[in-house]
Amino acid sequence: MTSTAAEEIGERRSGIVISPGNPFNDIVEEDVDGLYRALVRALSPLGLAYLNVVHGGDENLIQKFRREWPTALLLNRRGADIETRVKDLDDGLADVITVGAQTLANPDLVARVKVDAPLNEADPSTFYGGGERGYTDYRALDSALHEG
Ligand SMILES: Cc1cc2nc3c(=O)[nH]c(=O)nc-3n(C[C@H](O)[C@H](O)[C@H](O)COP(=O)(O)O)c2cc1C
Image 1 (cartoon, rainbow, N blue to C red):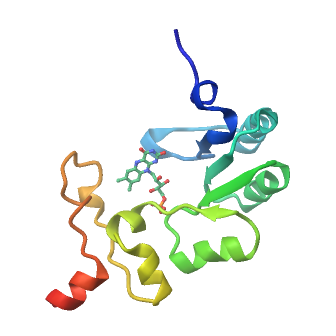
Image 2 (image 1 turned 180 degrees about the vertical axis):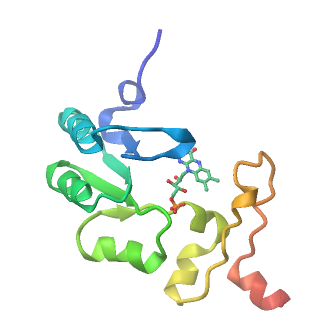
């Protein structure tokens, strides 16, 4: 028997991530706009808590999601700096911004942004490594200050 997360814990506790036009692992999608608008339209009545969109570069498409999606819109502006991502909140384009690699590389990301401290650069050679390297060994600002 199979069941969905929403069936087990309720739609209001479930969300979905979509990555329109993401070429990862040689994915090729045609008619990205038509495909994802149809998907989002079909999902809209379900009452999910959020839609998390990995930005594929099409600003118009994100704006359409913003207009059409009825609950919280989360946006991952892939590869962008924090200031650009925060602007999405200020502009009302998203309710929440999601941050991947910079969060990995900065265990204290929020504290750093608050005091405008420089960020550690993520090291892509350690992504998906299967071990702790690149996942638990980036330094927090405090330890960087105290250990030099
Ligand atoms: C180490 C690592 C692991 C990731 N794992 C996943 C995953 O399991 N599922 C997923 O949808 N995206 C995953 N991502 C993609 C991120 O969620 C995000 O979309 C991507 O890193 C681009 O956004 P960013 O610039 O905020 O990192 C991963 C990214 C990294 C760097």
